[in-house]
Amino acid sequence: MLRNKSTKLFSEIAGFFTSDEKAILKILELYQTMGISSFHIGIKDHKQGSFRKMDILLALMLSPLAATGQSKNNLITGWIKQTLDAEKDVLYRFVNDCRLRWRTIVYGINCKLIDCMQIENPSNACLILDDTDIKKTGFAMELVSRVWSHVEGKSILGFKGLFLGWCDEKSSLILDFSMHREGSKNEKTPFGLKPKQLKNQFHKDRPASSAGAKRVAEADQKKTDVGMRMISQAISRGISFGYILMDSWFVNGKMIRFILSLPGGKHLLGMGKMNGTKYLLHDQEFTAKELCDRLARKKKGKRNRALHMVCIQVNVFLQEELVCLFFYRNTGKGPWHFLISTDLDLTPLKAYRLYAKRWNIEVFFKESRQFFGLNDCHSRDFDALIAHTSVSVVAYNMFSTAKRLNCYETMGDLFREVAIQMTELTLSERIWAVIQDLLNFVADLLEIDFSSLLQKLMQNGDQESKLLRIVNYSAARAA
Image (cartoon, rainbow, N blue to C red; front, side, top):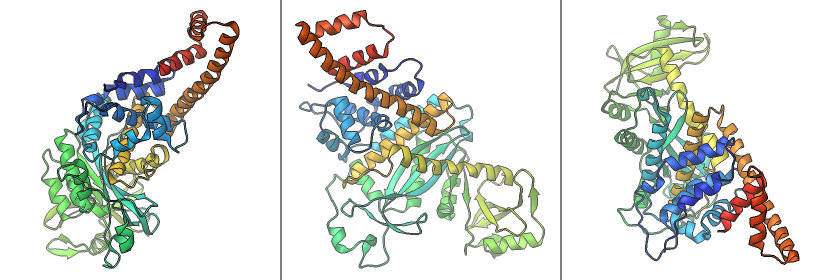
């Protein structure tokens, strides 16, 4: 018979804490309201199985809570052992299963989190499209390649993670992601690896229609194409937003035409690049630098007191699409930078402040690495990498929502409070183990039954004492 432990996981953890310990309880409350068991994840339970798939998923989703109070070595496998009494092979079979629909799981949870926020003006929210380095160390990892890191200024071993974020005035979530490898111009070292290194990479066969096979196919697709599909899926899921923010790498004519074709009057706002791209103004073509210098000579720049910058605004054509360029310069002799928008009604001040929201995804990259182990998956299986990243994204989104609802100033404040509470829980379990040994020794001396002694102590104990809650929690764990 399948074990039905999912209904106990929340109560076993939450029951230990008092009502004034709000951080951990808010996180658990959010998980409970998600209705994770209702998500169709693509795997059916087998009659001969010992563990329900949804129980494993729930325990895996809760594992970042354990990460706040313990070291990361063998953390998740220890957590699965503690919550489900399952060995690590149960976890490995689950995360390596190519049929798992992680994109459906993440979106299902995100839609419910946004509902929990009760946003007054959802159309004021923005989507953010950006990529980051997912650094790895093993050449045997499936699909791993050398990718160019703009941060380190050199090629590194790993993946490029493409993420689609959502943000409003108060908080941000990650809606979707994909993992990509980069090719090489040198035919002798495809993907930046030697032929022997490629040959020794992990590989497994997947059904063509499986979610894992689609993720593998994405790894070799252009990030701009995948990004457009992510945006379309966000709309189909009912995510409301007004602008799509992106770095200069993603801004091109194809992306502009795609966003203008979206329903509901969506607009692009992205960083421009001072390169050879031509912009059409009054039937003449100019590069961004030529255009800026021309307008500056004509004294088109205006001082914006709110930004303490000189700003120039001009409408031009980019690959037959009418866009607005906003040029900014801090001082009279500093370099010019510019933004591109499809919204011709924007002002330089509003465009600047809107684009500043793009920093939210940079905060996610930093905090997800620091607190939720974004780069910590060492499995050779690409399906496990997708599972690990999905769990990291869900954990970040849960904490971000709890931070908003509990009015914490930073993610670090919330994380540290949960860490203290989870460490207290772990320490209490150790204390209980010592107490249990002592009580067994006393029961033997008095020649009475251990359970009778325990029951008498609990009946005479202070109902509000921490010791009694430790006993109650540990007794429930042992049941």
